[in-house]
Length: 398
Image (cartoon, rainbow, N blue to C red; front, side, top):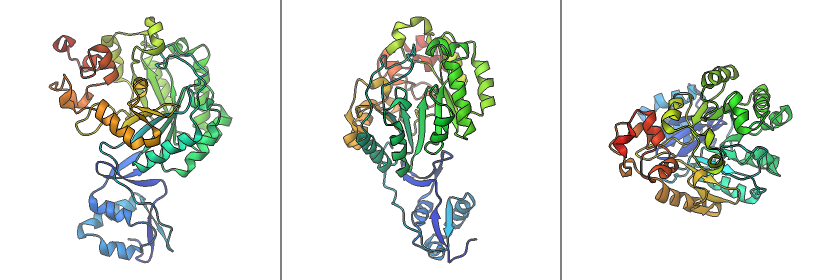
């Protein structure tokens, strides 16, 4: 047990978040610890101003075990002298906005045949607008900031943006095609990001989708990132020319010590409309969803449909449900709180509102992707990909 004369402080790398319920979040390890009210109040007072003896005296009798656990987990650091206080955690909106996909540019060095944007541009987010978005996101209790594009490294002031993020307590994830990351870039990124997600869409199938030579470049990028101990995750899109390569990819990613592997099927929009030969029917594509591991930002809690804690921001600051709904913005980052409220009102449903609400798999699949459902039969209809994945005959739903 620590000396009663020491001053406890929430350890560096941890933040308190009052989401639907209280949590302590370990930014570097991406671990969310649910707290009871007594433990949360105790950690709020671990601000460097109160000695341990005072906090133990004020804590309830049943709190001792929780406090010992937090000390054992190194969620609390002890100082011999008073330590500057920290900001108090504010109540998040409900549902909580935990993940922000911030697309900082629509520039890209590739012309992928499945890109949902369907275009390349020259737009970069203004740094002032970027800072405003991130500041509000943190204030609302955000956890993960996902920096994307286009290819985010092509933003004209990319490294200025990375430097700006040092003043925020968020998990920073860079979403990149990986082809522009060498040892120089990886070395610099190691001081700014907690994770880099790269895209690998097959072995030979990758170059067919993204352009000749891109597979070798992204593998070099991964090696550079791992050399500087940056955790790497991988995103894979299922298409006709990689369907026989999933076992090889699984073996490859195990050698790279990948943090997580997300597998999805691209919606038929953007460039994919002009490349129909890459499209797999939902029944066939669904077989590959068994691959992959790790949680993604589209997870939901409570009784909500897919992505109950996520929204997207475009380079011009417009806020939408996700990238697929980019043409239907609900507001902008000048008032992220109001925009998020409209996202929840217009694009988030409870499971009982879905046409497939009586399905036995509804709580597992959450109805699937709303954009894919909209393309199929309507925004409240079943997502055919998820129906096939769970073995639900589509004839029942049609």
